[in-house]
Image (cartoon, rainbow, N blue to C red):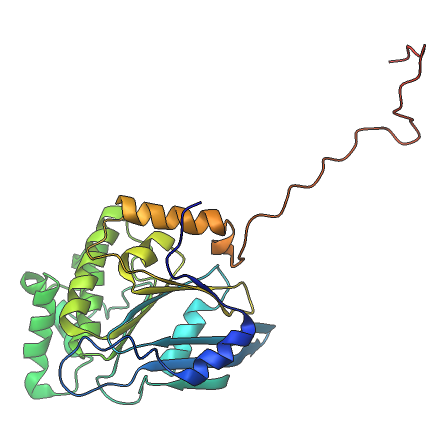
Length: 307
């Protein structure tokens, strides 16, 4: 079985202790200028009342400034709900979140599963829409579109753009605000594979240039391993972190490269049900049921030729 370097299994009791420690001091910001706070999250309990559903229980995570964190979990584990908590869109939970500063202009960027562009606005106007400084808004919007390769399409409306181009506009809009925290909710999941990997390369280039802290939620293990500094795996609902895997491979990481394939295989060999939120090997197969008819004695007897 292949070795998973520095992987750490989490128990629910570990979550509170790690949350109290704060971000790992060994990970430092890649950005220049003033120091920025790290992200600290401890969701003691998050539930919905109608219908009654306990979504998160004792879920803790941290991210250092400029770190790229991926969160992988099964469907229904509350990955999108976690992003809503981080963004300050949902404050109805027990616990605490520090370091996001969602109320401060320019601190938070988000990219959703769908581009969410205003159809009556051009690409440029969709980016300008999120900027607060009128004197600089157009210049910053053009610069953002140029970074994603769409400066020639600044005047195009969403209906005139392909799905991949619309998502480039969404990335430009998110980075135009110069976010310190960028939240990504499976932004490339509905694209075909080549287009999705092209946009992941664009995302990494933007992240490298601007150095926000990134939290990506995904169900795609290969995506998480190719993009992130660390990957956190969630249990099934009520979700908590059950495994942490640092990824120290150099970037870029080709999705079909041998190092990524080896790491993915090692994870799934050690934890075949990991993507269902369960750690450990598969349980032993149950013994097949006997085919003996009720009331029949299966023990052969000498001289008994009955079939």
